[in-house]
Length: 108
Image 1: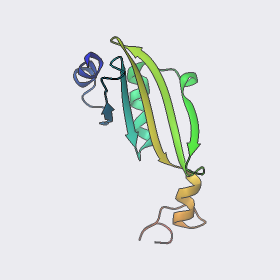
Image 2: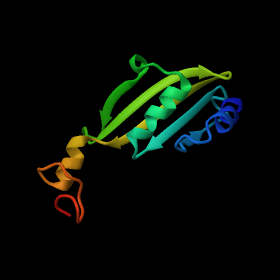
Image 3: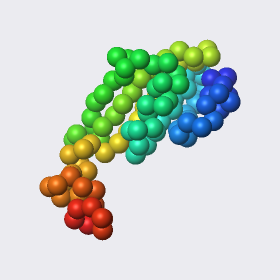
Image 4: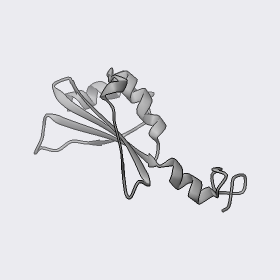
């Protein structure tokens, strides 16, 4: 809880994550960012996590990209995770040209 309080005070302008705390693992804080891989980068920088410490993998038959990193901070292990649509999934929704679906993009 100390880490969560610290982040709320020190980083009020960062994208709001989903925070998960459980009494089963009181020394762990999980911060999840859904549908926005771009929100991962400002958090990574704020937490002092290096590029080489970020794990990239896919899930859901490769349609979801996942960025994940952990760091010890304020007495807790903070696990930062971001989920977003894979580029190929966006392209298939928008047509072959890679534009997003909708009136200004590819096929709706």
